Image 1 (cartoon, rainbow, N blue to C red):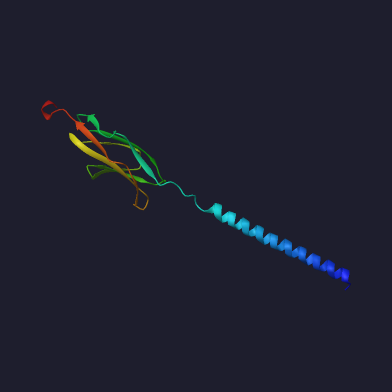
Image 2 (cartoon, rainbow, N blue to C red):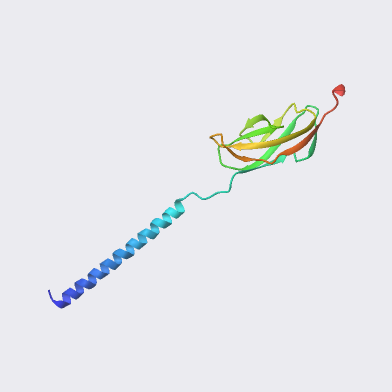
Length: 139
């Protein structure tokens, strides 16, 4: 083989090696970017806010009905548990509910959000309410 052919062969080999290394680097970058963007995004923890009744509110209702509504920023497939005076009163998948038979006096209300496995993922702040009813003598 002539010297000129050997030089040409070496430069061709170097060129192929450089291209091969570049492609390996590009492939690694693409894999890294793919892995980076395929990871689930970190999301804010679920939250729940009791809208009604407002904290420290007075409810005048002769039937002892208390209408509760809330807003939540949580995952799908959750269940809400409504507690009155630390006793579970109702479980629902809706964001509004009415409790009945609430006696006169001061009461605490809060909600828990549970995922499909029954794990508590959020809780609302406790609201204190005051239920006023007519005297039983006037009913």
